[in-house]
Image 1 (cartoon, rainbow, N blue to C red):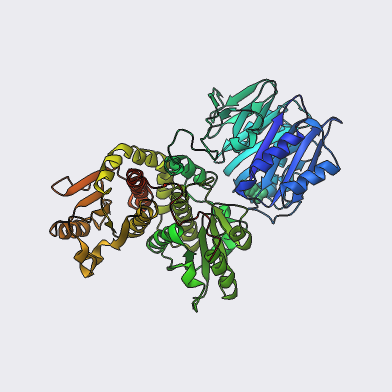
Image 2: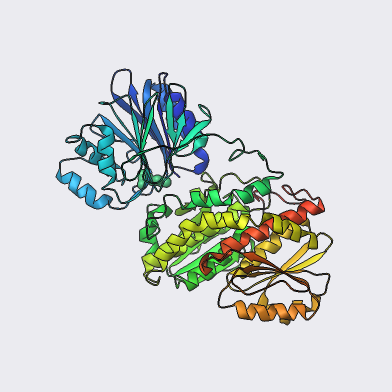
Length: 611
Ligand code: HGA
């Protein structure tokens, strides 16, 4: 995904820009570039396809020295990954822009600007921004005012930075849908799309809010909010451990990663939503064309990612009306597969190096699929490189072997896929996408509410510490959530756990139920609730102890052998994401009670690069 770095200082800023880009490399990108206002009093740029190291080599060969500059790593959405399409984009010799996100009305703006005589040198949506600002500067000479006027004409998502050779003391920035943070130095200031890029130069940050415009000088920062009013944004000290590979104040990485979920889900959504829809281009430049042809989806994954795929199947069929099959990669790769015409191959993997999933993708290329999409957390992985389209989950590094935030961000990404495919195919019911987009925006705070159940769940964990077997039940899209809950408990507490669709109980597993086998159930308030309640009675009638995670309005109450833990109400389509949180916490606290190695459970590895 794209990254932005900017700097205004007394010292030479070129190495700061390059170091910043290197720190953003984990996000994945296809080209990189920078523009510097040089000592010769002009803007100069270098751009390269491939790695930041290529750009660095180019800058070493032909050095750029200056006190003001912007830099970018690009992950193409509009126009192929070429040097011409790499950012920064220029209008004339004096104005440069870098941009993360998608300008949806770029075509009409491009036509208007061409009509006004602006020559385009790239296929990107971004280039309209720089010409538009240039045009406005003719009547509105202040760069900040021109930027304010320009963003009023942009539809879509952007985090952008602008510099001008005519006003070389300032760096301008605007945020709407794509994050930006200002790094505060002493007599120098910085800008980036992610604070990680600036940890080398400062530990004090100011986060821009939606609609903000910022003017960054060496010794002063001014911010205007979306109504054009002067705004104060708090300067915060970087909290060591908030992102970095250490546990901070948490006892285990797994607990830290569980608690990061509201923030990382927010990041997964950034730059991919407008007011009422998912931006198809977020999946890559050819996404709209490819999605228009999709009539079936085949999902392939392993472990936790497979469970995310199973949830997606319920979503794709019920919301988007698109037939979907899901299979574990180690099976898919070795069997003779019959491919339905116009099937999109979707692989899901945290690392993007999962050997079975990668092999399945390589096989799929021989099998006549329409195209391939990778849902992945690592931008520079093989899965991403070898797929036609990508949606990065942006969960950040996951250290705990048992996957938590990688799973919930996969689910969010798969919901975005469902909505994007459904709209492009015209199979989504009217209004559904807008409603879900609104609910997705609220999701981070809902996940925060679910995390507040932490201490209740810690107590509930005591019921499991001396048990050897458990059963997890769910119905509909909550069945894979129950599977993921059971997997988590197995992985880190070594308690045998099985998941069943609740309706299957009487067809066999009920024989296992007795007072030594707790039965964990996920019970949102949906049309299957009454059926689920009957299944719970079947368990109680056999003396089984129930732990039920139930919607606060589900009408389930504590009773003998029944422990009900109330979960905040949420729209049914997003319930699988919310209900995952208490199940993660339950496994975690059971494992802590059992004294197992939570972050590195026996026999397991993080990135399964072997077959
Ligand atoms: N639309 C721009 C920027 C792409 C981006 O933000 N990717 O994550 C382009 O295609 O250059």
